Image (cartoon, rainbow, N blue to C red; front, side, top):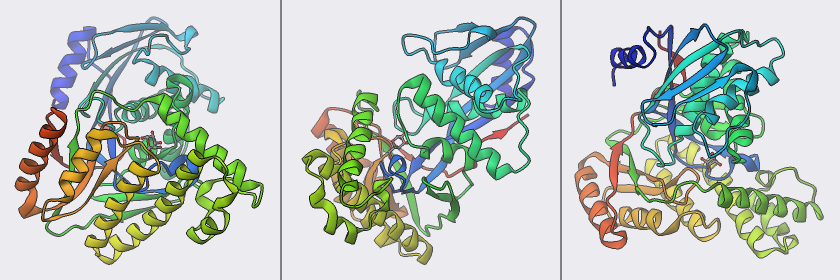
Length: 393
Ligand code: GLA
């Protein structure tokens, strides 16, 4: 959809023009999975897919939510902002408005608003459509509510933290900060090497001569399941508690692989031990992958991606038959440097590094193998790495 088409859709919905328009992207994570809530590093990029938000003040003290993707519409009085039942989609927006007010005592919502959302992140694909919606809402309403932050970098980090808090409180997913951070701080043709403990980060150029980042969508009916996700978060806490009896730590990511060999026997819970083993290994792989990319060693980067998938499959147990089928088929294609699941898991997408000349074979072979194994049809997109959230007009 063009911005003119979005303007026209707003006018059709509300009978007048939108005053402002914003965009926030979804993300793909290259490596560093299930490390963010363990104080580790991640390496995501913002995509050119994302969420648009058009807004205009209205005369009544009511927030009206509409979306071009969802049939449900909501009208919530400004005085009654709280989580809505039945997984209402407006929770991703309402939560941000509520959290802005709580984190910024100076912030005031002085009027009602008409809002129109549009998203083109494939639904349920694990490419952070909800983070895009949170960050675009946080961007718009920090401005409307008068939050003043001069430092753009700190402001963008704050938008990510608002989005993450919304996900915790209004969606019940105890996620890390990666998705919202990528949506807020993305930079064209760069990945973000983020330390999720300190929130320090670096934009690293993604220079892949003759190689593309290809996203493959399982279209698997089960998407990020907050129950299974929150279980992983709890299992990691158990591992931290048990390790802390011999060596106090705050996060699993503090452990090097050498520390791990010394201390792993302190974890008596076998499930917690597997989860922790993944996290410690993934933190080391992520650091090695970033160094490899900086040195132009893309083949090694690819191997680390593949090792990441194996660990997520065997130790973290978040892949499932569909993601495994896609990754395992990709590994067989000549010209694929690496392939792994991306995001939370349990369905969603894989991310692969594929040589230009192998892309057509990749789509044909992986698509056919996947359909043979699962009965489902996969979709393929060549990722375009875009900028973080912005105001368009
Ligand atoms: C989801 C969460 C992120 C992160 C990933 C796994 O996308 O929202 O915070 O934990 O899963 O790396």
